[in-house]
Length: 477
Image 1: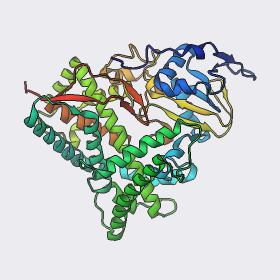
Image 2: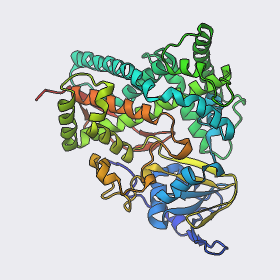
Image 3: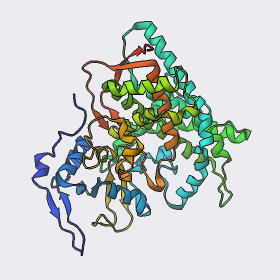
Image 4: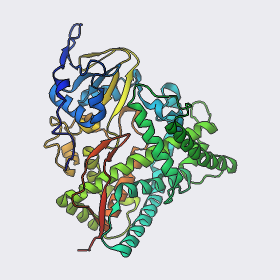
């Protein structure tokens, strides 16, 4: 069973050609340069196994490595110091890179916009994630989870030990939650056009980021045509809900109502119809995909680590005593939250972030030329042996306040960081904690024996071969 890239080594054809790039300039460090193939550089190795490639580059060449991906000069930044510089210290010098392939889906939403326009949109959207708004959403999250658990009980009644595909179950659940809390409408039905359309558009956008040439979206290739049909499907649903909400002027208690009514504190302006669409699409896509992956890996780790599972269920019994969790229970679900945090350390849904340098910079004593691409990988930094003792071991108690105090800020960054940290970080953390608690107190999930588990680095980190697990009702006591 393959669990990750620790045993991966750079292909011999790359290792033979690795060399040092000496930087001219006083006081600047030499930057290790992994030259790779003559034409494509390290592109093939990166494409075939990005997680293994980046981890092996770190292990063999250090925390700051220059590589070449086809025509692009790329730097791998793998220490907290370097990550913090990119996200926190000098973020204005770095544009998001590769996100143009998401533009037909998310437009100029928070995911892809830059500069002053992004700052305006962030100001408008931020109140939608205030803690009082989040408090109201707890009931929606727990109701949707109860519905899923009811389906699981029906499943057991119809056939005993048949497995459930947990990745698909979590995707359906998070789509239900994000659509209800965002738009006041559940679009997650079993034959959900929204789910299929989102899945295809996100997959296709990621596929395009790995190519040096892509036909324009308007060029009628079969994949482009399918992609644009999916966008039209999503547009029809989202615009219908936006128009209905704007026409009625009612506050439905959801995020869309908040966004429709939001006004910029500096200009007094609100969002136009197209911008509302872009933000709704952004929240819908991000809230659906990332939390589903986080939960899938959490239930895999719950099955693989029985002692930590016992501690989790002891806390649930002590705090909840079999009842559905409420907002007021969250501060007391300490171990449950740490369990989720440690799951996202080992398997962060967003496994890498890419940026492009607007101007020349210096990071950790290394020169970064204008136009360079930069990649940070939470998956690799979260497993860095200089930052984490026994990094491959699953240990939720790493996240006690005592053990976290001395850890560098950007040793752990599953939601990014700095001004552009994910706006939904509190929403997602609350959602994952509640769902983990509710599932763990009702069901044991056991991986189908012999099923291969391998993390696959797509837009999010997903199990390459799925996650079939057999549910069994937890016996009290």
